[in-house]
Image (cartoon, rainbow, N blue to C red; front, side, top):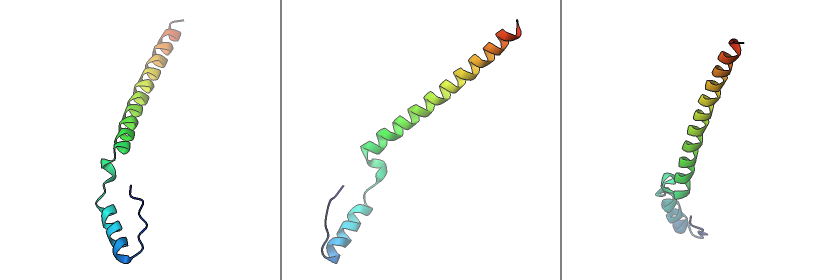
Length: 65
């Protein structure tokens, strides 16, 4: 990220142009956050599946009593 302090309108215009060419998706920190988010969602789905599977098996076991 640029820490410029534009003093003239031309410098400000150049600063805005530089920022407009920047893509947030290309930032490595954002890419790692997206990967972490994807992994967390997959873990959440897997844990939810396991929870409901075990709940079903417990209900089956209790119905045999």
